[in-house]
Length: 473
Image (cartoon, rainbow, N blue to C red; front, side, top):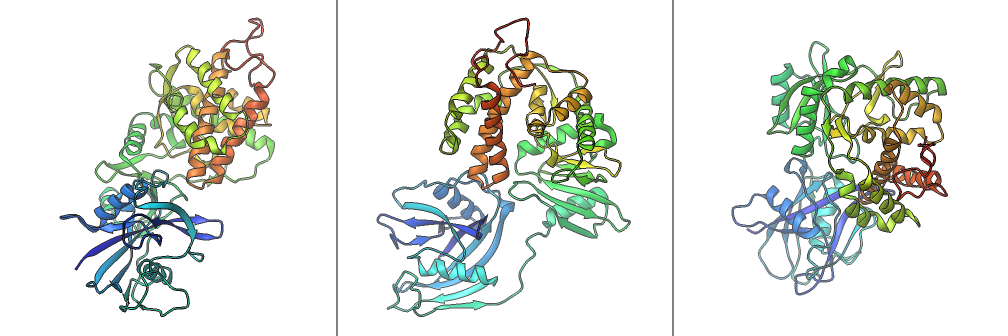
């Protein structure tokens, strides 16, 4: 019996869940009809391998096997007199890359559609699988008759028979990870998924019988796993109790277990001006401790600067007038600056990765982007909170222990622009409005600060007697 695999690539839209659909074209079966990305198994290929391959070949997205979850199985018989076949539909909510048409000879359209407003005409077989998926059942029978159309006919005969059954808890921790966690900390009595929306990594809060609490994180890829493990083993101990401690790491599973911190998320918290300034001062001290946790290295070219052209290509349709010119000018300026020293950095220093204790002290976590980089690179995202709040900037730098040099001031502007374009490219491609808006807000600020002052293509102020004139303070 032939076996098909179907990809239900799902995201959260404004009006509810959306799925990615493609329209078949050319000399293929059901040409002109909408369908899920799908295909047949290759010889000696398992179903998970097949759906990952089809996703890459048809849409360009990359999927990890642990992010593939079984959705529904459909026993289908087409109206053409062919023998019946099994279609296995897989749900995927995490992936990397932006979906695009990879096979223009077989597909002429690709788009996201709300589950409650599916387009037509659609292959009836595909529609049967989506109806079963929306109903939350594990399987369905869809046997068409010889005179039935290939396309789903609204109001026509319903050939779909739903089969009820138990459904799996999609937030349940995979067995392999549970074994790893229990080897590290003992028996786990409760594992609650607390992953952030639209991130590739998955996180569970673990509880033991004696009341202990830990966090297990499975990284989206080997690069992030290696960075976080290295940071916890070498740099993070310099922060003492202000950061988690690494309990165990599993390279094969790309997972870590870390200790829990007692605090509340700073992201979204409303503080008065004085309290927020104290938090910024403490964050400056944490940044200084991290940056001094290992010897400096000689600097090279910035990865962000190297990738600015690629990010501009992706972000260009979403940029405002003058944004591209500003970013390219700053990229040219960045190349003329002296090579900086590189220090251990957090890589994503922002309120989202900070907890606040009952006493108002910040705690730092999430080191998967930690790497040797410029000190100013760690001030790019936290610097978004400084817009309109010079008191917060002053408090952070007071905690950091020194002001920025003129070169660092300009480097911070350049790196903020690079991060903004990267954020707009990512945010618009992954429907993350917060990241997108942060990028746009940064570019608007840079336009305002640099407009009418020393040209951004000149890395030095015009008047050596006022070395910081014309640059953000």
